[in-house]
Amino acid sequence: MATRQTQYLARSLLAPAVGLLFIWMIVPLALTLYFSTLHYSLLDPGSEAFVGLENFRYFLTDPAFLASLQNTLVLVGSVLVLTILLGIPLALLLDQPVVGRNIVRLMVIAPFFVMPTVSALVWKNLLMHPVSGLFAWLAKVFGLTPIDWFNDMPMFAIILIVAWQWLPFATLILLTALQSLDEEQKEAAEMDGASGVSTFIYITLPHLARPITVVVLIETIFLLTVFAEIFVTTGGGPGLQTTNIAFLIYSQALIQFDVGSASAGGLVAVVIANIVAFFLVRIVGRNLEA
Amino acid sequence: MARIATTQRVAVSTAAAWLCGFLIFFPILWMVLASFKTELEAFAIPPSFLFFHWTLENYATVQERSDYLHHALNSIIIAGGSTLIALLIAIPAAWSMAFSPTKRTKDILLWMLSTKMMPPVGVLVPIYLIYKNVGLLDSRIGLIFILCLGNLPIVIWMLFTYFKEIPRDILEAARMDGATVGRELVYVLTPMAIPGLASTLLLNLILAWNEAFWTLNLSTSEAAPLTVFIASYSSPEGLFWAKLSAASTLAIAPILVLGWFSQKQLVRGLTFGAVK
Image (tube, rainbow over all chains, first blue to last red; front, side, top):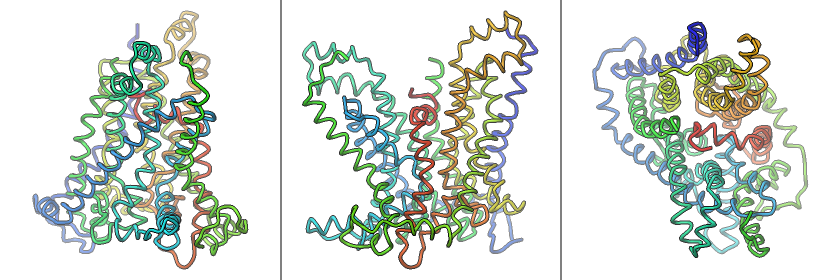
């Protein structure tokens, strides 16, 4: 069918994309690997020297690393739980007959299109400000003490902001999956006398298993490197309370100018992301064959 | 719709859905309202919801004091430029994989996907140093280049899934009728591919417009797009909420409109076809 000529054409059309992505993947990664074995500080140029695995030892035993690893896991885990636990009922609700469903959908999806720096600053100031924020006013109306979000529970504040940004994504994907669910199957179950709850547990939830997995994996990829939200609100503080791996590497590279250990940290981040990516690629690959 | 939806049930789910939608949308609404208040009103407790002195003053101040348009123009150039270049590279690649697949096509696609999963922070150091040495820090070209590469896998994937859906029989029929590859491309493929191309373009524009890792790290003033401009409000002096809100409203309005048009494609593009 395909002649040799068209095959040649096909390959030369594909080549630029493959070549560029290959360079994009290999060159920086190789450089990161190389820098990670050097003593290399931008404050002290010319003093580069090979130090073997010293940077990894330094980075991995730095108390800041353990703290930021823990913060990363808390942030990713909490946002995943929040977006999925809220996303499922929300998607089920939007799948119901609702007057003006399209408008409601638009409102629900909107936060996903707001740039991270805007969401973070609007939440920090207009909503979470301990004196003049809307939450503080609401707390006072109900006779409670306003919370000083970014001092008393900084990580929780960031989790709320990031969960708000990603809830639309989870909801939209789950809703798309729900709409492809076979109505007849559900009707048959109802005819047989199944209650709403058991229809949900035995038919709807198994159908959602796959999209939930996809949501978990894709959100994890993005959430592992949450950066802008921390950058504009807490700057990693107070102390190290909101420093995640991405922010730690940033501060080592561009605040402390320690190229060597920032590179070692970068490789650690790559390894963590790859563990997640491995599973995601397998799921997508299986779908490609179907 | 065989299921009987009683009026009562519709009323309940409508009320619940509107309440949820309103709560989720509220921070954006609150921000838009604050952008029309004076600084004193924006900061006032108890807050006024609708009955305040509506003013456009903040929008004027934002442009005068901090040259909003300069950063908006940067955003347009960077998001638009990176999207167009990515499309130019991705169209032939996706076309070739969709219409002349080989044994390795699947592996190539998955490998491209895996490049998207590399955390940007893992290569921040070398990219920053390279940019510093060749003078690309705080330049539009530098940002266009990096955002283009970062989004290339998504663009190729989306186009691939769209091209895959074009029935191949049509191509064969055209070939039977003696169409050359060039004619086939112009008269048969292009018209059928335009909807897919348009939604890929749209989603990629949104992603590039909102990108806030490379833009924050690689630009400061000259090339700074809106993400960086808004970030500069994180260490302000004096009352600034109304101005922050005005700048933010302007920064997200165009993308909100584009985004609302592309919600269907969003699922497809961000799940790499795993959920349709």
